[in-house]
Image (cartoon, rainbow, N blue to C red):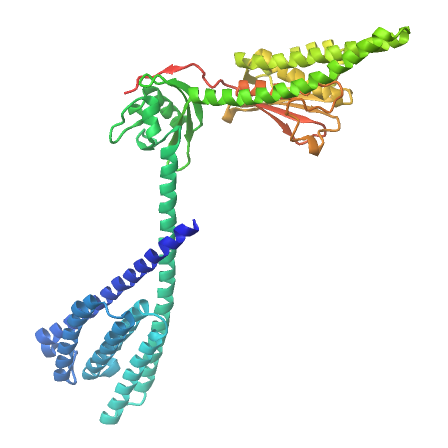
Length: 541
């Protein structure tokens, strides 16, 4: 980014210089218009107006010379592009001299021509730089005061007129300085706008390049269905050739139908689409935006996603296998050692203790293998709408009966109409792992395990919370609770929470560990409606 800024700096300076020359051109054009008005007024109207009332010949000659100089300044020096400050100073001096002489020929400051000097100083302040504007104001003040002094000496004028000339001179300085400060502010804002414009153009170019090179298809569609922007992957994934000004229906009729639904409901939608043009199965996500009601449409090749997921799964399986080998080795060593001792031991009590070691480690191996086999069930997810109130009651009855604990330990708080989109067997397994974990650490008093349900209709979301009154998860272990084979319990396999999270992902839900409340607090966030996993056949136009 630094290199890019350096390369853009010269262009910014050049553009600023051009902007100043444009303003200078307008200033010269204004002079030409004013000089032309003065010259034509004397030439056509003569003495019918107040201009040149005291010295008409002087006014006429000064007006002619001023008009010729204005033409020269506008047409000649502007093309030569000499030093800006030199040209401006020369022109302002001519303005002050000409306007002062014409003011003298018209009766002095009372003629009103002193106002024209204020306009000249204002224009010079907007175009000029540095302290030159103060010099221009000083020259104008000296000219007006000198004209008033000459008038008083030559015609015995009223000394009170000096007060009016002094006020006009003060106005010269105020106008020149104010115009210069305003010009500085304008230049700053112009440079800021230009800099931000360059940054915006660079960012837009980067965004264009990123979107163009994305592997996923991206469309930006307006509320009326007109496509504002799309990348080449859209045509490749859908197998269509888009027209010059496409709408969503030009890509897919099913896509247009979903777009209209998202615009009406104002919420995100996800569905699967089979594109007849390419034969690909796509995962489509439509996201409404707040800016002008546009909708972002993402097209994702499901086959590519599945391949990536398979690669991740294979890598995870490799780590899981290595950990399993380590976990199985310990109980096998204990079993082998206990069997050797049992062969040599003759006492009955020692034989019973060694047999117990063998049985316990065998059961641990059985649980480990059972948990690993559960991982294979996540690919068989068949979600359905489950009424959580009835489901939790049945689950609690079964769990407490099998564990041999009091039913009052588990407290249920679920609205009667609460539902979740989940595989029934998977949800039972997830809850069994979470409640088993809570049972290990809770006080086993009435209500020590709380199962609560929260429904969010506006987002089609349902949350299932499992909270116990135990000591909670230590801060140092919070980042590891979902890792395979991580456990703080002597008889645990460390796969319960890992399997629960995998099963939630298979059902497009999220399992999270929240802050202790006061014990461990887990949340399963799912949907009350399905993602509509049925493949929709769409006619691609």
